[in-house]
Length: 295
Image (tube, rainbow, N blue to C red; front, top):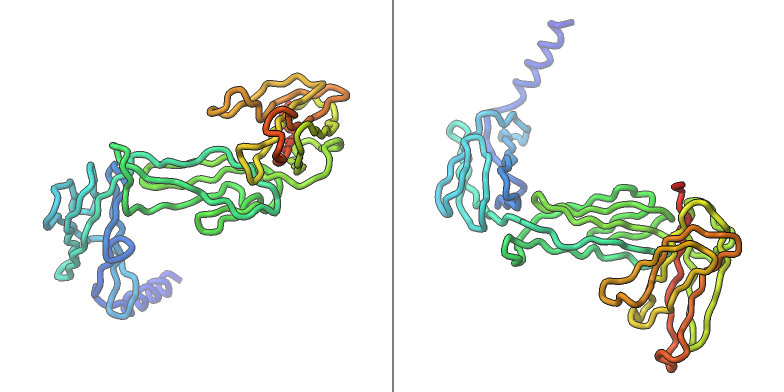
């Protein structure tokens, strides 16, 4: 049996020719967005396109900015700049441009609330250097923790099912994080179940209000108002018959837009449009309620 295995390995080795081509990185240019040392990717092929072991490939800094480059291709980019690298394996050589663009922070992320049927949500993010300037170019990758709840469509996400998940974008060593909740359209909250996410749209004229019963629970409710098309004219929110902590947006500290509550019997959620505030316009939004599954 061992003789047969050795024979197969020798046959496979005989099919591969000597190294004929080196590929460094993922194209004709090596882009490094890391500020800490990073190992460059290299692939070795023979003339027929067979992948060969990359052991023995050596690197040297040929010209451009002075940066640390080890013989095995570990590069450190302490600042932005350009250089030329030479990769060699025996007599085979390849010279490639290196673009050092270290990312020191990735702006973006935060809470996202989606309702089933909403258009895709754009993941806005921006890579910046130590001085806060834009970094160009940079490579980024997106990761969705639970793809049954949201689907990735390029740099956008689309709601697939009610629930909660995380979405992360990575560039260099930095990360932007989104906490995503998806709600199911509904007409009422009176029979909401543990762990369920429900959303009811509302449109109110001045002086109007709507109310919905919520069942008593020893588990927390999250109640908030999601803006409609006009983010400056969103119905006000109140919760009666419950022990609540309020949440307010940082730029409008006097406007309560969300609550975390323990509901008693007879509790109700109320959305209203004050009669004396912007009386000529309707206000619209979506009341979103999440019944928690933690005690």
